[in-house]
Amino acid sequence: MQALKNAFRQLMAYPSAVIGAVIILALVGLGIYAPIAIPYSEAIDKWRGGEEYWRQNPRLVPPIWYNWFTEDDLPISFQYFESDENVTRVDTPRPEGGVNTVVTYTFDFEADRFPQELLLYLKANYATKRPFVSVYMITPDGRELRVTDLGITQSETYRFGQDTKLQRRLGGLAANEGLFADPNSETLQTLKGTYTLVIDAITFEDGDELTSSEFVMHGLVAGWFGTDHFRRDIGLAILWGTPVALAFGTLASLGTSVVTMTIAAIGVWFGSWLDELIQRITEVNLVLPFLNILIMVGVFYSRSIWTMLGMTILLSIFGAAIKTYRAIFLQVKESPYIEAAKAYGASNMRVVFQYLIPRVIPLLIPGLVLGIPTFVFLEATLAVLGLGDPVLPTWGKIINDANSNAALYNGQYYWILQPAVLLMFTGLAFAMVGFAMDRVFNPRLRGI
Image (cartoon, rainbow, N blue to C red; front, top):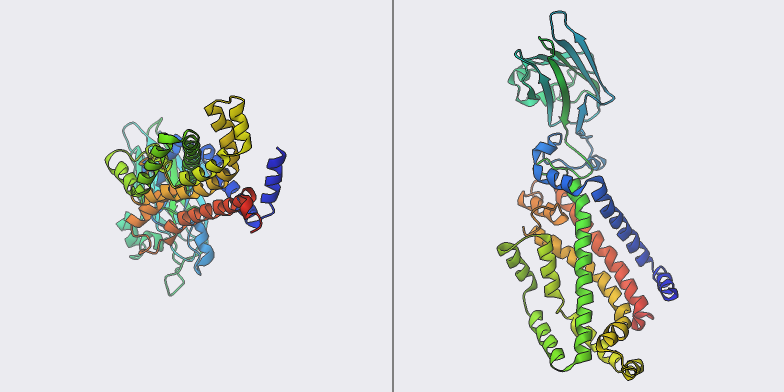
């Protein structure tokens, strides 16, 4: 314990290690938070469910922080339910049967640009006669703009932008422009202030009612990470990509490092044909195209992240590290305490696991930490090539989707930059901690 405390104290003397550790702790915290905030099954359903889950989001818009860097204030997307504070509902029974329901949505609009689209989702319960709904908008200057009058079904979706009658009433302007345009401006500009959307619904028979309503505005920015071509919140993949990347990198690095070190120790101790066999397998494996084999596995067998993890460890355990560990173990093998262990009759496995390997563990730790970002980038690379896990939302899959939809050519830089920056910080953090550990645990580097 005292040795560990001293090592930790020395490690914290490096500013780069402190910064790297802070970033790693933040990533670990995000990785722990992800399954708590969005359980695995829910995350998979949402990511693969498409527009069914993301109807409140506009398509292909940047995150809300994009407004910090633009001259014009872009409208932010929102979704209002009847249970929200700025929504009121009044139900009045009609003497002749049915109910008169008035739902009022009040919202502030302070943007310099017009929204992308407006939608109403209405649900009703009726026996024979369809409920009749009138919708109108009250602008900040007191004007009352009639939006539509229609009979609704049990589940009705009204898109303002697809109503040609509304467009004619607005003087030929699209609904998203005409409803928010300033009538006193010579140019097409937004009228800022508080707007009120009123839904006046009438049912005609006892027991019939407007069961629920929902008002959605698709703005030009949405969420903290923006949306993709399926209207999905990219934040879901950013959030869940964190534990996936860290788990893949940590398990691959840990499995590879520990197994490689163990194989090298066994080969050195037993020597003879076993050591020769291990060295020949290592030399053959070093010339094999590692990434090409993983691509073949993904194309012809399975893209499951567990399959890729297993193949990664299998192809990595007979890597160049075996040569390094072998050179170290050959020196340790000649140490006096190893001779003493053999003299009092210690078994072969006891010597390997109790005397050889523990001497090399301090050198294993920095390599293990430095190996994590290598495998994180490998998982992302496979996903960018279209060979990522078909179920999990990951950072690499975001980049793959962005690349497939020409995000850079369409100016959607946020789509690629956000996961790329996270990958960069992940690699940087582990590199800073790993290099500092190498100086602490490797005596030859302590004076550098």
